[in-house]
Image 1 (cartoon, one colour):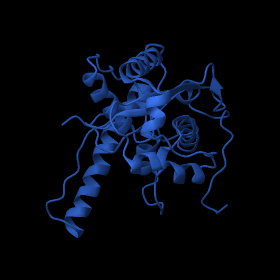
Image 2 (cartoon, one colour):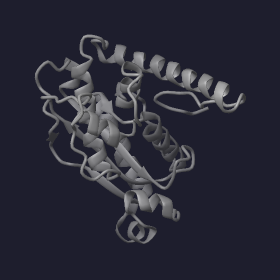
Image 3 (cartoon, one colour):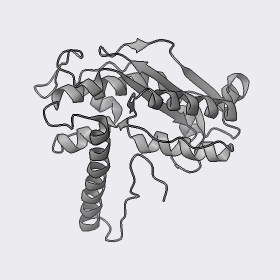
Length: 243
C-alpha cells in the first residue's frame, strides 16, 4: 500500500445517493461504439455496504457475428462458447433494457465505469434489434468523477487502477459481474472521499458529470493538439456518444 491509497468503510458518511445503487457493465466484440455487439453483461443492485442485493443477474449472448480474438483474449468468451451457450442477442438486449429501465423507475442511479462505452453500445444494440433505446436516468460514472476531482494523480485510470487505489477487490477483471460490482464499490468510495464537494442530489450530480466530461475532453483535446496532432479531436458526449 502506498501513502496515496485510501481505505474506505463504505456505509458511514456516504451521501444518500450512494447508499442504494445499481451497477452495469458490458463485455463486447470490440471498441467501436456503433458496431460492437454485446457478449456478456451484468446489471445488479448494491446496498450501502457494496453488497449485491437480490439475484446476481448476468447474461451471455450469441452476438451473431464472430468474436474477434483480441476481444476473446480480454473477456474469455470465444465465438464457439457464445454460439453454444449464449442466448439470442435480441432477447438479451431486451432484458438488459428492461432491467435498467426498472432501476431508473425506482429512482436508483446506475453506476457504469466509462459510461459512454456501455450505454452507447446498448443504444445501438437496441436499434439493431428493433427495440426502443433506453431513456436515461441518473448515472454515476466513477471515471469522470475521479478524473475531475483528482486530476493530477499520476498513473492510469482503468477500472483496475481505480480499484487498486480505492482498495476495492477486483479479482476477475473484464468479467462483467466482477467489473460492475467493483465499479459500484469504487463509486461509493469516491462518494465518501468527495462527499463535501459533490452535488447533494442525483439530478445535480448527473448534470455536473456532463459538464466535467466535456471539460476533460476539451482539456485532453487541447493537449493533443499542442503536443501531437493539431487536427486531433475528441468525440464528445456523456453518457452517450451519438454524433
